[in-house]
Image (cartoon, rainbow, N blue to C red; front, side, top):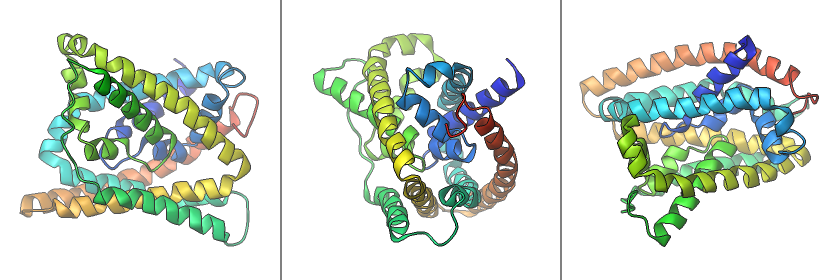
Length: 300
């Protein structure tokens, strides 16, 4: 694996890890590192773009899968013991990236944002804040003995997960928590216990189909808006990113209780600031390399 492929793999792993953290968004990381538009363009045109960009797609895709698996193995302990500090960490981490996303939203255009840009941003914020008012319920779904309704529900969940990957700022984990499916799906891999995985393998099929259908279909929609109204699309992404910070911060404060948790949260904020600063430095250079090495099209 060459140097660039290794970087693509590591960025993909970061996207995968952030995708499964409640309140965090893998899509936002994709935007920050400059791979978002290229991924969307590839998925929207599989024949002419994706197949010609496999040297980029394969390491990123493998990284995402590894990131998801790493998260599935370690997430239970982290959430049980340090959920609130982690939420503060992610809120600050995302906050540090706001200037870069705002710069992407404005692009090379000068002047203040238009009315439609502002509306798009407000809509993005509203969508994310709305999740604060959606309660977390037990879905009651079985991952072993599935009936037709369960299969359809898992297909829809696959589409929802794809949506959270295609739309930056939207946390797939937060959506799954809201509909009561986060814990069952995290338990799907059973700590990488192959016997558990095989027992629940039937649940993976509708999930995977829903994810593929959702990713390809939604990518075409986002790609259309990127090509025809890029600035407003990025302002909507900016709004969803701001909204995700609001939701994560509110949820973190709601769970803040006890001196130990307060100290841990302060540590999480400090680490988030430091990591966010380093992430900005790395992401700017990587994004420039990714755009320059696009498959024959610098706008990919």
